[in-house]
Length: 313
Image (cartoon, rainbow, N blue to C red; front, side, top):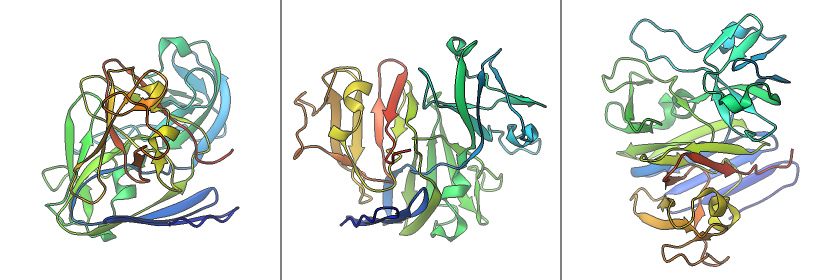
């Protein structure tokens, strides 16, 4: 069931073990009630921009003003905690619009991303800088997570999987002692959660008013969500038809009832998403990806999956 109020979106969706409540104009919140089992989980909100401007990329750097750049720098722990980027640069214009590049270093008046492609050097772009959404933002101590047993699996771009647990009220590495709640969850991506009993996950943030381009890599499982906090996304309304390589790449959608059973396999004919017999989906046959969930995508070559905004800027 969906109730939509203009100016303030209010949605209540109840599914088979996966229910949510969303209230949002530009910022909002979602509550996800998950039964015991295994899920693909992908947050639909971002954090507000801490800086927005325009500039020319020079040596993979951008000039900024009016912001304390030290607050944008990656973590630099020396006590055993893993170090991660704290912020990312979201390109807002041009070929790379929608792509998030980690802030890898800072100076007094600039930010640098070693991830910027060479093609961006010398280009003038509009951009925003945002703090990463982290595991601690999503999985809090009051969610009902069972300490030392419920597990969060983070699929990394190099093909490795990092396991995270709740221990002593905080997210930790698999040693149950080293804090790792600052592990980032990149825009449009997600994690796998395994639950021994029911939990309620509460997320909040900004509804993203721009497209999101999620990088996907060959040889690994790429988790891609919807960035749509107001409801489910039909595959025929997604960009999978053009984001997936024809007759080769695939997107697998799993059930949201905790069983992690196969829901659908999606391919592309080069323009439209298809079933596993390469028949384009119709309005009535199209699978859906629910808000808070995602698909596991496998590709033959590196690329991007574009997620359109659910709101009008």
